[in-house]
Image 1 (cartoon, rainbow, N blue to C red):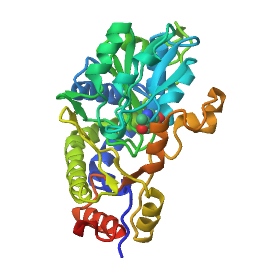
Image 2: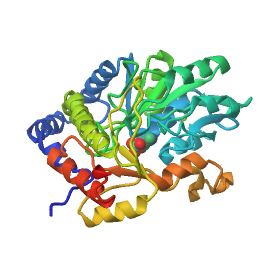
Image 3: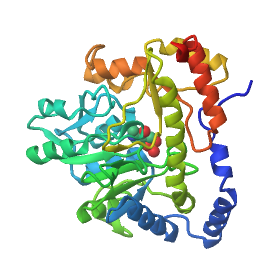
Amino acid sequence: MKHVPYLDLRKINAEIQSELELAFSQVLASGWYILGEALKTFEAEFADYVGVKHCVGVGNGLEALHLILRAYEIGPGDEVIVPSNTYIATWLAVTYAGAQPIPVEPDPRTYNLDPTRIAAAITEQTRAILPVHLYGQPAEMDAIMAIAEQYNLVVVEDAAQAHGSRYRGRMCGALGHAAGFSFYPGKNLGALGDAGAVTTNDDHLAEAVRSLRNYGSKRKYENERKGFNSRLDEVLAALLSVKLPYLEDWNRRRQVIADVYTRAFSRIPELTVPYVPDSSTHVWHIYPLRCAHRDALQAYLAGEGVETLIHYPIPPHLSKAYADLNFTRGAFPLAEEISQTELSLPISPVLSLAEAERVTQAVTAFFGDGAGK
Ligand SMILES: *Cc1c(COP(=O)(O)O)cnc(C)c1O
């Protein structure tokens, strides 16, 4: 029986190995490894791809979000609305800035921030909304932008899982006032190490993030603010330039697999397949299946050689890291329910259709051949 891995990064990179090696050699030979031409090139290419004026490369996705909040001078005493259902990095960015994360529950169908619940969470201290395009599906941005306008708030997109994802035809990363991307190796566009970027049409913000990522200086030894060291290395920028032209094709391959899964599992009453509204182009960073018997299903699949993951087993408000906020179980029931029922199936540009079939057969077999029901 053949093992189906959740994600085989080696296989993805092997498809373009010679191009990656060439890019690496060029940076090696250049003798310039930080804030050079390779980064400038990638920043221009990624800004163009997303359809924004500016892209600023930074150390990782968490820093991208953190530096945006800093650049907007959001900090102690301020509140930022975040999804209750997200990876903890979204919350940590707010905490890094010194502000308070204020969780809001998701729409139970899309798993993304529910715009109808946002107004009730807004106070005199609220400065920003930080929607996440979770699993690769855009948040409900028109409604979120309308609320932000009404209350004069900044909207920062967490686009760490949404490279190439589109909302009403417009690219994630170009929908709010600024966006943070992650190029963590496992993301849809992944480097061979940690990397991230800020995208924005706001000249002032781009300028501020450029300074903040580099010790708070635009010119060497002239430090206008207390900045950070959070830069996207030349080697990684060059590798990302090699990978970017493949992203659309890679996302389409993920979409084919998602279609196979959704078609097979829609017929099984015990399963909830992802809901994709007409306004969304999902890029399937994660394929989130939901099942009341999630743990048993996961164990069964493991026995069948099918590797799965859970995104995420502990919602941020119940994690030890945020014990100081004193949230108890039941505080955000939708996020808790998702954390108890979500199961991520293998999905990637290099998962073959035969492997996807093996996954669907194994899942179907667990339900006693649900197709026959
Ligand atoms: C990956 C991720 C981040 C953080 O990105 P890093 O590059 O790992 O720091 C932030 N938010 C979400 C939703 C993510 O998935």
